[in-house]
Length: 380
Image 1 (cartoon, one colour):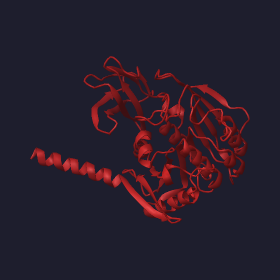
Image 2 (cartoon, one colour):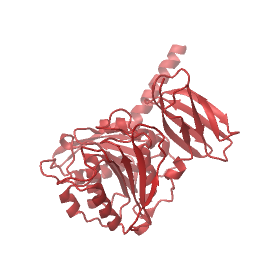
Image 3 (spheres, rainbow, N blue to C red):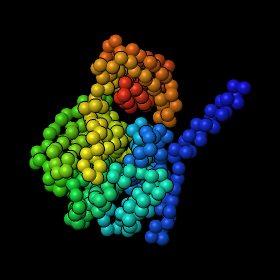
Image 4 (tube, helix red, strand yellow):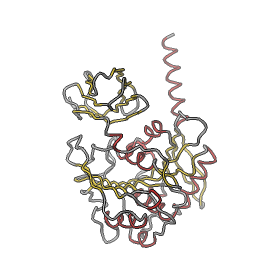
C-alpha cells in the first residue's frame, strides 16, 4: 500500500511540473520559433499574471537560462509567468553586423500576443530581462517596444553603437542594470562596437528625465567570494520611473546568484539577480507604479549568518514584530530537506544543518504575510 501511495505521489509531482512548465512554438517570418513557459500554480482570484520574458546569452538556450536563473522559483513565489524564448542560431538580433538577422522584436511581440491568447496575461505588466546577448536584446525591446514593455533588467549586456544611436523610446522605461567590473566578455567600460555601462545608463537617465546624481549605497558583503555590490539609484524620474545600477565590483561575465555555471569569471553571491530584477520591475506597469513596494529594503529584513555555513548551523535574523515563522530548506531541485516552525521570542534564531552535504540550498521563510527566499551555501 505504501508503495502504491508513493507511486501516486511521484505521478502527482510529475503532473504538477508538466502543467507548470510547457514547451511551445509557432511559425514567425517563415521560421519555427520555440520557447519554454512556466505558469505558477497559485493564482490570487481571477487577475491575469504579469509576464517576464527571460532572454538567454549568445550560444545559450532558453533551457540554459531557465536553469541558472531559477526564475521558476520566483514565478511561483511572486505569481508571474516566466517565458524563455530561443533565439535563431542561439543568438538575438541586437543590431550588430555579423549577428542574427531574425526579426526578434517582431517575434517577441508576437510571443506576448500568443501567451495572452493561451494563458491570459496582464498586458500592462510585461517585463524583459536577459543575460549578455539577451541583455542587449532587452535594451532593444525597451527602445522599440516601449508601448508593450513596462520595465527591463539587463545583466552583463549593454547596447551596440547602432542600437544606441537609433534608440527612440516613446516613453520613460524603468531600468535595472547589473554588471560586473571584471567582465572581460562585455566590457564594463565599452569597446569600439559597444557602449560602456555609464554611457548606456546616461541614455536611460536622460530619456527618463531622472535627477542627475544617483544615490549610492554599498550593499552587505554577505558571501566573501571576491566581489561586492554597490547600488546606484536615479530617482525621481519622469512618470514615477527609476534607473538602478547594481555595480558588481570584481564580478565577471556571470549572472549573480546563479545556480551552477552561467558564464565566465567570478559569480557574486551577495545578490540574486533574478530576485533583484523581479522586485524592481514588478513595481512598475505601463502607466507608472503598481503600488507593489518589493524593494531591497524589504529583502534585507532577512539575514543569514554565516553564509556559507561551516559548522552545521546558521543564524537567521527575521523581521521584527513577528510571532512565528514557517521555514523549510530545499535543494536546487525543489526537494524539501528540513522544516522548522519557530516561535519568534527573539529576532535571531539558530537552525541546525547537521547531516547536509556541502552544496547550495534554498531557504524558504513564511513569516506573517511576508515570504522570503534566500540562497544558503554549506561548506563541511
